[in-house]
Structure formats: C-alpha cells, structure tokens
Length: 153
Image (cartoon, rainbow, N blue to C red; front, side, top):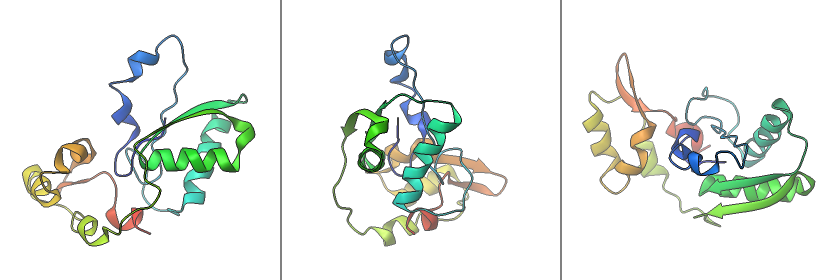
C-alpha cells in the first residue's frame, strides 16, 4: 500500500485488519514521509524505485497488487507502467492526474511551532484533520513528519 502525499504508511492501519489472513500487506513509508529519514531525491523516479527496492528487500518475486491513495496512487500507476511484469493489479483511490501549485501554502507549514495547536492553526481547518497523524513533537516544539521543502523539490 502506498500512502498519500504528506502522510505515512501508518495511515492505512485502520483498514489493515480487513486484509488479515487473505493478503500479505506491505505498507511503505515513502521517502521523506512517515518515519523515514529526510534528504535524498524527491522525484517520481526515486519514489518508483523505492517500491522496487522494498519488494526486493523482502523477497517478493511474484507480481503484486498495488493499492495507492492519492499521491501513492500516482506512484503505483507509474510503477505499473515502468514494471508491468511486477504488477498483477492496481487499486487507485482519489488520485490526481495534475497537481495545482500550492507551494506557498505548503511552505508555510515548515519549521517548528511552539504548540500542536499553533501548527494545526497554520495548516488550517480544512487540512488539519488530514495531517493530524503527520505531526510530531520534538525537543523544540511541534513539526511535521515531512519537510515541506523536500516534498516540493
């Protein structure tokens, strides 16, 4: 399963019990998201190669079913186009074919905020519930698990 932009693999936790017993599920924290380290290339080619790397790392050799939400759906779709022999099926949910430029809005979320509420206020009511799981506490305050500057490269 491939998560949406700004989120992480853990966002699939509520639906994973539905797959229990019937499927082996791998949930990838895409680079710069969730619990991954920051840095490195944030290109579509890099995200697609990460899918290949995960499958190789865990020894999956048969074609897979990819479930992708939003940006994860774009990655899944492009992975299937690049490696059709590795994909049995695609489940794409809520994906865009083009992205509006929201750089200014997203860059305003960068940095460390004194309180969780201050960060949620900066994100704004429409997106705050969506990004709540992507907020973490640091020694200096509250920040996002992803770096807005990285994901916009």
